[in-house]
Image 1 (cartoon, rainbow, N blue to C red):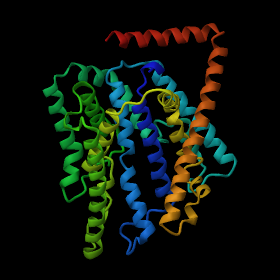
Image 2 (cartoon, helix red, strand yellow; image 1 turned 90 degrees about the vertical axis):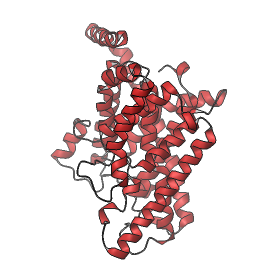
Image 3 (cartoon, rainbow, N blue to C red; image 1 turned 90 degrees about the horizontal axis):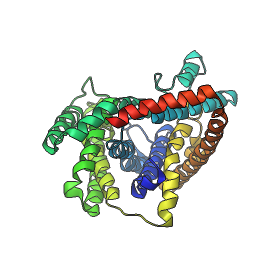
Image 4 (cartoon, rainbow, N blue to C red; image 1 turned 180 degrees about the vertical axis):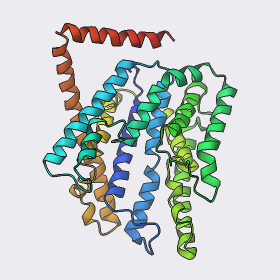
Length: 373
């Protein structure tokens, strides 16, 4: 989308969601989340799990934003190719750099490692981007469907999707073999369609910002209470060990509704003036934060740089987590800003080649095919 069409409220939410993602990876991969099946969590461990519950909505938020914006636009091959180039450049450059500099931790540098760098989508280097690329490839079908369906048709479709991929796993006291815990394209189809409904027909009872914030807070607290309850049952009975973290999975009803509440709260927000311009300039670069810190060359390496191994209490946990969220976010934004500038310069150089101009023309022709639909 052009800068004039950007929505500062959703760009701000995109930034917040990405910082939440950094918090999740700092806590989980920094060893700050004690095992729920352990005998004691401790004060810092309990606080870490509480932070986890308030940030677990991040991935669903990102997909709500994407679905809300994509459902009214057409499929563009040019956009897909830019995304793949962005993904590949991070995957290869920082993956090789991490291996060469000896920064890699907990990841063997072997043939599989380099294949993952070269084929990041098919090899699942970044699971979220793999699911997102597959979802975008479905946009020609999904986009047309949600544009033409009536309100009742769309509502019925969302109900059926959520029953199958969200509600059943949330209420049944067992693990479903086909449950991917929200790490797949099918779950993001559910979120995409829900976001499309909101874009077309409004937020309904969540049209007041306070209600959305209350829903978010209530769902996060319920998810924390549910997690602690399942942990208590396991400690007492020794059973349901595989289910202790179920309330904190992306396709559980509580993280889904929590993300819905926070998204609707931001959707009602109105941001204008200079601060809106600043947010709109930062928003497009947030994906670089994810691609940088989740690269295999750095994935398990950066957490100690922000003191994860020096946390001894709740105060230190909160301080180091905040430093990590801000530090990684800024590093990712600056890195993506530099990469974008380099790619723009390369594009200008290549525009002098006839074969490159022909390629750009062919891509534009494909874009126009779907624009007509």
